[in-house]
Amino acid sequence: MEIVRRTIAVCLAVMLMAPAASAQQSVIGKSALEQAVQQRVSQEQADRDAITSLLRRAEVREIASKAGLSVEKAEAAVSTLEADDLRELAKQARQAQNDLAGGASTIVISTTTIILILLLIIIIVLVAD
Image (cartoon, rainbow, N blue to C red):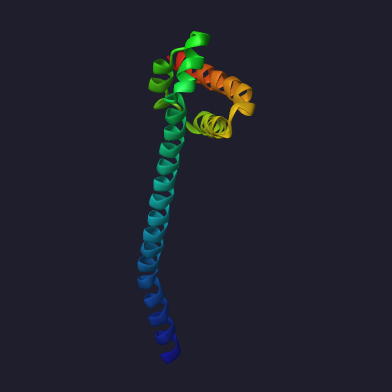
């Protein structure tokens, strides 16, 4: 009889502790989730900044003007970019920044990349409207 009482007591103790342990795991999970969300927001902002930084360069404004593209529309559209489009354009913008910093030997590649970035941003905005 004593063994049965101890078994029941242990079972009750485990059942009473289970919700507390479960709640603790939820708190840890929630904290990790919040951190992941914050990292994503930070990365998206860094991506937007990379694109905007490229669009504000004098060389880009000159190229866009010659091609008849509006840098202002492209800049305004950067805030509407999401997920894959944002990451891909930011990657291209960073590459174009590196190319422009590299000197005249890469200006042809940069010009093409800049025009593509401007066109992609404008097309994405037009499709979204």
